[in-house]
Image (cartoon, rainbow, N blue to C red; front, side, top):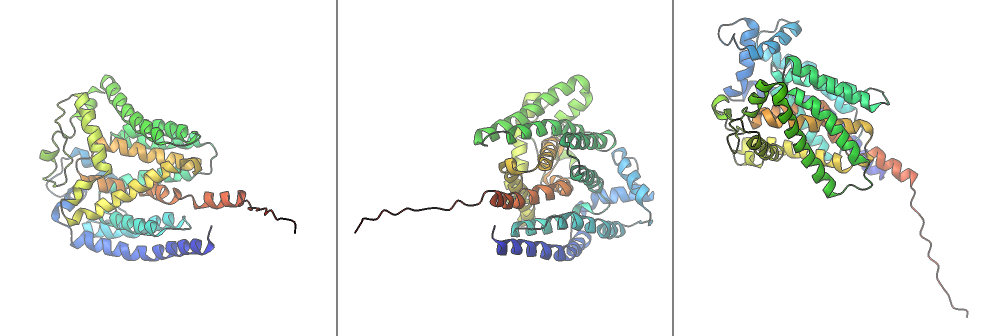
Length: 382
């Protein structure tokens, strides 16, 4: 490993940490003064319920979020500005600590880190539902980082976090709890292959879709009402999404048909993973496209390097995969998808930084020194 290149990566990391506060300040300015009114809709609704103002007081789906903010409102914040700046001051240093745990960064990791810090301070670090979501992903991060040799215990811990969130906050996280176990077993199987080929990746993708289909088919016998709601979740997207220009509409209306649901599910999964259509909706959406392509790159890079990654990374890839396949069902629009995905930051940063395996590469170089080439020349006797 070229030591000069290693020093460059270390310098990249130090520079990124220095730039994070500046990016956070710029992001807060954008959040408070430059966004259209529609971006504050949820925040104003939560703030109105929190302060006991008139209107929007009967939105039961928001009550658990309001209760959370009541419990942590030690400073008696009553305005959007107070919540935005206050949570930014508290949570940005935590993000910096997590990012600082990586010792080296390629230039693309620098851009990704600064981009996600900006997104967090615009869409997450305020009085939003996403603040609660990132708290759960902080828990996942802590569980994965525990000094336990038994990886299965970490998987169980992550499953319990997803299940806990499903019981009182977002019920569809039960899908992620089930998918985490399945995805972990799939990636353990992949890591044990002598050589990872394209057919293995195809097999994994197909099995993931089959698992989702099986889960939904079985759920109709256990929780039929939730099953019907999930099947028809997107049929009313356009009417219920406040006129969002980035709605993720079903190609074919489901009308309770599981077969059509799965067809739409596969199409929507591809659309969310590769959101090319956003680029045609205006230059404002290009950063979201770039952000998603960063994640796509790191995700498949982690899968490609999975044989050289440690057991913790198998859990990371499994958790993110479970989150993605669960989110495809319910995300109403690309804006919500970006906000929710940014809130998975603790897992995303592990996916981005650990997938490079600098340490593993250096160890391999030390363990397997280059063989000296010996050339024997034949000479004629004179």
